[in-house]
Image (cartoon, rainbow, N blue to C red):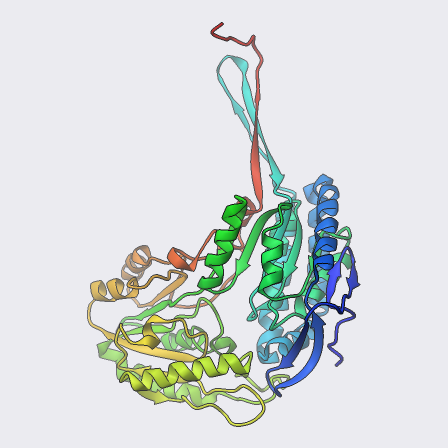
Length: 484
């Protein structure tokens, strides 16, 4: 499969190139080889995208919500029809196994387009009756040009999760994917244009932090939505604040999974696998601090070790492979450094921990036990396949320690006692909580974090409020009174 795009950027309904921009090599994590090349956006490219989005947004906002929704639903159908090719591309872009990308990436993007496409026609204001015959009505209006900044772990999904609600509300979007995974968002733009979105409504420009900063600081931008790390989020938030722009940020975490001794151990192990090893651990909401009540700790560790024997590393395009490489050599080395730190600080290495020799960026799924709250592997976001097991005795202790982190993206509890489960999720300081599962993100439900893990919510009806604003119109039916 030739994955080299026609050009680096998709602007105003067409592929656009400017080779004066810095070269960005796309490296396939399975082989370590360059499989495509794009160029970072130059100032001329950024200006072209901004002009196109500004112009197209006015036309797009004049369409009815039903008309916009029809385009988004058509795009969802196209994305599902091309799921195989989009999944193969996602695997080249990220290294994630096709077994995973074929069910979790383009499909999730299509779900978002379909959901917000269905919602678009229902976006209305309200009538507020006042005394004496006066009344107020409200208009839900688009914000204008929105900038989306993507992360490298879910390039198709993130491009869709940001684009779908933005477009449903009548905005235009300029999306900058991560320079590590620049290919998939171009296909999202292609699909939307083919589905009938006017040229310029959804644009993709490539680049590193400097390109993102140029987009965020442009006075024509009304809204910024970022998926990324906390340090990046802090910079973006500060830049957006200078222009008093709307902001949504989905950042990192150090999320807890709390497993009580009455839990179904098999389900708890499955949840911990999903919360630590899916996407080779490269998921922001991963539950990397696994608190296990002492009564079942060794049983949990034995069963986890047994289940990890089912890991199949290899060619991620092979449907039998269920565990892929890290996205880059740099990320693999960062994770290896955390594993070495865990051993150095006295955690017990239960299984895994080795970097796999060869061209690909593989590292074994790793489980530590006897981890204390102050160890580096328990405090810092690793973003790799490293699970830390921490012992606890009481519910109160588990909740206190689970919340003892500046992050607050996700949290889950495994227990047969549903009253305890609801007490725990009520007490968790996290935006996305789970009972007897972890890491599921249906588009119908809001997704986002508390504390340092972000601001605002993606998905669900709540996303509409982040991509639109209400205009209040007071209608006087009587004479106007004034003091003089």
